[in-house]
Length: 246
Image 1 (cartoon, one colour):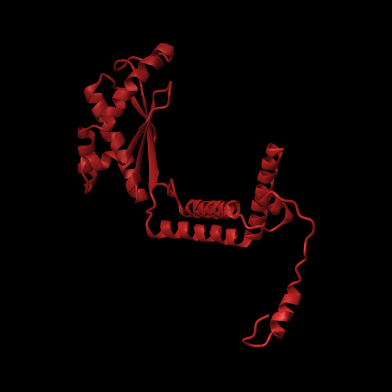
Image 2 (tube, one colour):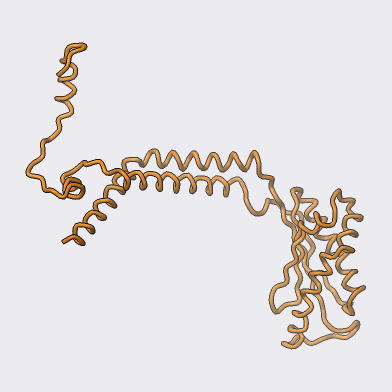
């Protein structure tokens, strides 16, 4: 009997919470709109657009002038060298060369933080990406890192055959977060906060509203209910003398 009453209480709580959410649909919607506006405002005021440009090279294993068949052993050998290539590409000599060639106003660590090297599994392709607030600068850095890294790889290793698969092009749109995404995330956050707040208030509110609430909180049944007449109460209040009491 107790389990049945507890189960009934939970069902009534959930039903009340859902009804409260429906009654507060307008405030919840307003919270979502305000959240979207705040997200867009934060992006406009604080966030800076970041552009990403990517170039790629293909590194052939084997000595100069000798073609190497593409097989499992060859791919495994190339995979073992990919970490070395990544270290060479982001090495101090390559970074200093790029800073000098492009006359960049930054240090080696600053440039390294803008560079990402990606090597897909079981391939000899190496992708070099550069991020910057200026799309032209992002493309220039990616291409210049590719040139400097190619010379450094040839100088340090026995690799001579390095082909350019694609050059970095000027990005037309920023990558990562943008105004639309910030507005969507802000709206979703505002909606979630409003729903959680309404649900929490509804669950914590133990005000007796219905006969079911009497049984739930007081453990007693109801014999009858007295209907409420709002218009009668309003009329009695209007007929009451000023300063008098009912």
